[in-house]
Amino acid sequence: MTSPTPPQAPSPALGWLLAVPALFGTLISLVLPTVQTIWLSLQRGGVLRESTYVGFANYGKLLGDGEFWRAAWFTLSLVAMPLLVAVVVAPLLAVALDRAGTWPRRAGRIALSLAIVTFSPVGVAAAWMRGLAPDAPGLAGLAEGLRDPATAPGTLRLIVAAGTFGVVCALAVMAFLPALRAGSVPQGPSVPQVPSPQGPSVTPGFSGASRGGAAPAMLAVGVLVAIATVAVGLQTFSFGLVLTRGGPERSTETLAGLQYDSAFRMAEFGPGASVATLTGVILGVLGIVATVVVAASRLSVTLTPRTVPEPGAAAPTPPAEVTAGRGAGGVGMAVGIVALVVFLAVALVCAWPWIDGVLASPASEAGSPRSQVNTWVPAIGGAVVSVGVAYLAALGIGGLRPLGRGSEWLLLVFAPWLFVGTGPLGVANWQNMRNMGLIDTFLALFPPLLVSVPALLVLTLLCKGLAERTDKDFFGGVFLPSLPMAGILAGAVALMNAQDLLWPLLVAQKPALFTAPVAQMAQLGSFSAAKPDVGAATPLLVVAVALIAVVAAQLLYLDRLAITTNRSRARAGAA
Image (cartoon, rainbow, N blue to C red; front, side, top):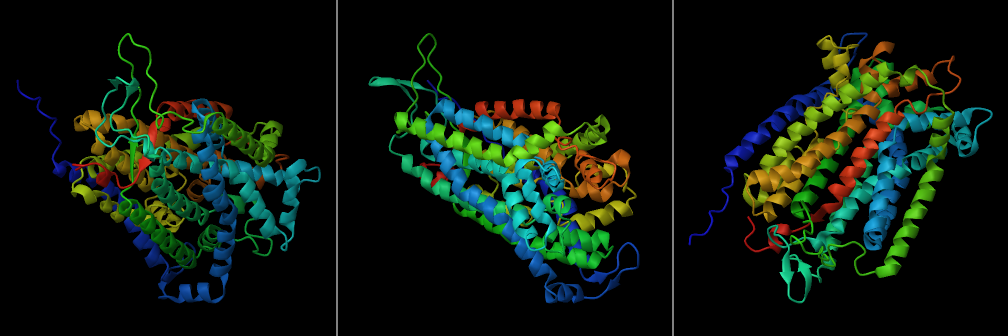
């Protein structure tokens, strides 16, 4: 009898080929605009007058008069409380849910999903703007402090913390939960359930003493969550523009607001590009550090196997490490339920100004079908392109491993733009759109980024983890199991694109091209609007469809994910 021929892995050369679209997209939409931004920062002039080369004069003025430092300090101060939520509250809630049992953990995932799909920065800020009215309802009355330069900075910090509490905690918990499953991952290729003479069916490769294996993964994820929270916070734009516009007396000016004012309100590209360059340098360093953490810890993501009973047999009991509520019993369940209830209570209080605003807001042009088309068609189209390109590269780098064990170090090529959004490259991309004659066209509403570097990172780690533990061919062992994650990330990027205010605000001045966030912003500046349409960017139909999709993804796929470190060292013979 001959042994079956093992599946042949595709050539590593295919891995390089699959990475080409991402490399090309990075060159076109990230590298060249970065170089262009740096060049613009060495000039003066812009839209209204001819540009002239001035060297580093813009940087000297920016750093010398304290504008940049004041804006940078205030921007960082806005991150403080969300960072505390992300690295303290979120891991505690994740541990509680992980120990509580299957249904509390899944109930938690559903509740957290609601916080994600309903988050709209402009909508939340518009709801708090109602607090400036004489008859301000409840907690929204806190916004009254935005009128005074002495109290405005502290008030805006509290509003940002309250407005982002739910989404920051939800996203961080989603990252920590898979890390807690690190001790549950089989130390070898995925295999079916086999009967055990001592009791229920078990999965070979699982060890009941591997609970401590979650600690390195939790630490690595905690570092990444902290870095990501700071990086995203440095690009805060919507809250500041809607609530204070940098005032009063520039007491609440953020880095993104300073860039926007310099480049577009004052029509001086040089100073605006200088702010963008300095911000981009900080973000680039954070991206490189995060990527080094990923590569050095040999982080990987994989799917834990489902428990499948033999035909005609009762469903077997999974090993303790696979089931929820591991090792804590009724006490663990009680703690998890209490933690979830406390989170829901705090989230409800923090979100109440937005909830009250949605219930009290009349329908308006901001929520019209036209604005929804302007919002969602470019958002979804941009997400499909950027995540699709990233997915191809992830299959090549993570699945086919062109450099062997060290293939994830290839992510360093993309690392400087890991956390860069549309803001730091906004001046250069706007100039490119104007040169192509696309300003005030529907095509300009599509996000200018051709590759999603965060999606590339996540998908690469997933393809890597799947490739290390599968005994199937590349198509069945890597491509098919990772395809749902590509769809999930495309949906996440689409949500972020749809809620972005800066890019559509820059490229569309015609009301017929306004997206929902831009229409909300315009409504807030209109004297004829009695109340802002708080729910325009989160219409009920969109929320319902997104919630159904996210809950299905949570329960059927994301709940099976596991994040591990040093996977290649843990199993003998790993490639």
